[in-house]
Image (cartoon, rainbow, N blue to C red):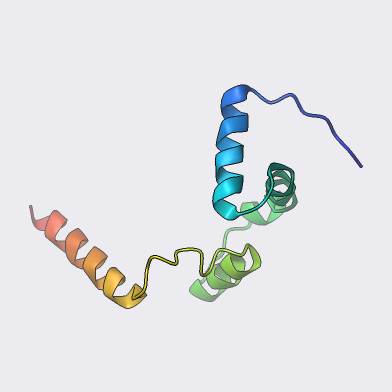
Length: 86
């Protein structure tokens, strides 16, 4: 089935940017958004469900610049703890 959409230019730019970041075409990205709309309503309740959701959406491994995720987590936690004291 084909649907023609007339999107506002700003929304089209935003969606195109997001699609490019994901490495897919605009049409594929919009299709992904539409096909996952029902799963967004039922948010993951546990860490395992969240990881499973991220895997299903192809999000794991997309931050290739982060070579040591545990070190980054410690750094972010330290920064957050320091912020609370100030």
